[in-house]
Structure formats: C-alpha cells, structure tokens
Amino acid sequence: MTSTRAVHVPNKTNKTNETNETNETSRASRSEGSGTRPSGPAPGAGRRVLRVVALAATVPYLVLKSAWLSGSRAGIPEGSPLLEPGMFLTLANAVTLAMDACVILFVLALTRPWGMRLPPWLLTVPAFAATGLLTPILTAFPAQLLIRAVDPAARAPTEGAVRPFLDSWVFTVVYTGFTVQGLALAGLFVPYARERWGRRWQGVRGRGLPSPTGVVAGAAAVCAVFVAGVHVYWALGGTGGMGAEQAAARSATTGVVSGVHAICALAAAAGALLLARGGSRRVWRPLALTWTGSAAALCWGLWPLIASLGTQLDGGEHPSGTVRLIYAGQMITGALAAAVLARFLTSRRAA
Image (cartoon, rainbow, N blue to C red; front, side):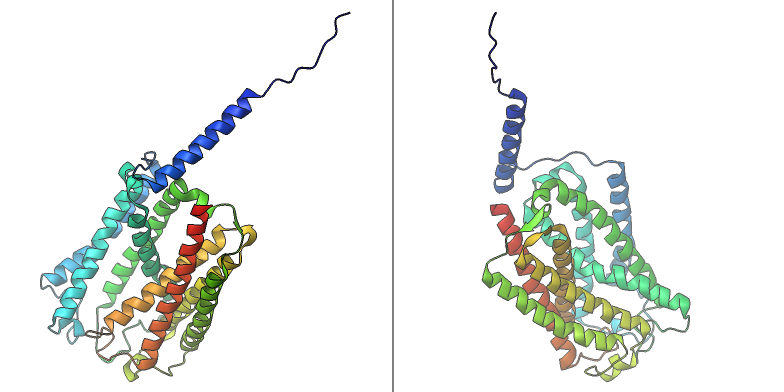
C-alpha cells in the first residue's frame, strides 16, 4: 500500500493579495508625501450635476457685487450706509467678490482629475473657510424663513435698524444662492475627501492625543461655554451688552443666528475633547463636529471682528466692547479646536 503524506501548499492567492495591498498602501503614502499625486477617476453624473449647480449658485452674488463696484445702486435703499463714500466698503466688496469667484476654481478642483494633484493645503484651507462661512447660513436662513412663514409680522434682521441697509429681496436672493452653494460644495467635497484621504477619517479614534493637546481642547471648551452662554442669552431675547441700535434690531429671526453660533461653538469644543480623548468609537463623527464647529466659530468670529474696524453695516453703530469680546471668543474657540483637529490628523498620517 502506498502511503500518502499531507503536503502543505502555500496559498499563493492570499499572498498575492496581501502583497498588492501592501504595495497600494505604500504607493498611497508616497504619493501623499511627494510631488506625485493620484489623478483620480472622472466624476460621475451626480457630481457633474452638482458641479453645474454649484457654479450657477455663484452667479447672483457675483452679479450684485460687480454691479455695486461699477456704481450701481441696485438693492440699496436711500439712507443706507452702503452709499457712504469710503475705501473700506469698496475694498470689502472687491474681497468678497474675489472670494466667491474662488469658489469656481474650488469646484473645478474637486471635479477635475488635476484636482487630485494639488497640494493638500490648497484644497483643505478653502474647504475649511467655505464650511465656516456657509454653515451658519445653511442652518439659520431656512429657520428664519420658517419663522416668517409662521409669523408674517416677524421682522427681518435689518428692518428694526435705525437706518435701512439693503432691500429685503437682496437677502433672499443672496442667501438662497449661498444655501444652494453650500449644499452642492458639501456634496462635492465629501466624496473627494473619501477618495484622497479616506484612511484618515475612517475607522476608530484610537489612542488619545498627548496631554498638551488635551489642555488645548479643554481651553477650547472653556471658551465655548462662555461664548455659547452669551449667545443663548441673546437668542432668548436678551439685549445686555449690545449697543442701542443692535438691541433695537433684535427679533426672533436674529435670535436664530445667535442660537446657531452657540451650537457651533459647543460642537467645536465637544469634537475637540472627543478627539483628544481617543477611544474605540467611529472617528468620523467627532471629526465632523470639530471641522464644522471650529470652522464656523473661527470664521464668524474673525470676519465680523475685521468688519467692525470699518464702516458698520448694521446701521452705522460700532459694536460694543461685549460684542467684540464675543467675536474674539468665537475666534479663539475655533482656532483652538482647529489646532486639536490638525494634531489629530497629523497623528493619523504618521500612523
């Protein structure tokens, strides 16, 4: 009788798959750190539609700003501070026109193959700024429309001011465009980020960050609680710390804006604390909280703080010291939370 011996045959298929996965990971790591970057697949029909929508949503703002820079008074009533001569308003119109024009380049970068070859900061910085500037509009503007639909007597943000600012249709047209623009940009950036940096914001949080980062997250939380407390007080109808004209313009619709700023500040702090702590839960949730909250807090603290240095757009009154302190608090909250976010993403890249 012939004896039969069991012979171990290596699984070549598994080894081949493992080798391929290792090579793909190595190539992805090298391409992220070197000048060679993936070109990416062509966008599908859905992303092509979103590209057209995002580009079309920039038109109303670009047309209005271009008209104002050319001397037009469309949408500007008599007595508006926008009619006062001065370089600050001209410069502000030019800067905001350029910012909205940059959205066109940003959309193309997210939907064209060459966008995958751009340095990461050239995409993440404008994406962060767009998130920060558009998030409060995306959340507050629909809520304001709902309030006015339920109570037609509810005042718009500027209707209670001493001096008129802009015709009401301007806010409707511009903010509707911003809302559509924000939704379209989110629909384009998320799949782009998944294709290019998916490994960093998928999986679990893992180990906590070093203790100095935890201190930064704690400082962000302290600032956020202070800022959110004041904004909640204003959202509920309080006017303490405001100037006379700003207090006179308070209404249910302006209270929504304060409520949104409070939520964004708390979201930034909560996300930063979760990232610093680490753990076994999915990482995309605290990342989304930190990204969105810190961007909104930073942008809507810095932007009005800069605007307060020139001609005021809320009826001519300069913000009070308390209001400027809240602007600074929002900016600090957002900056601290963003620092925790950057530290977390850096640690994921190193891992």
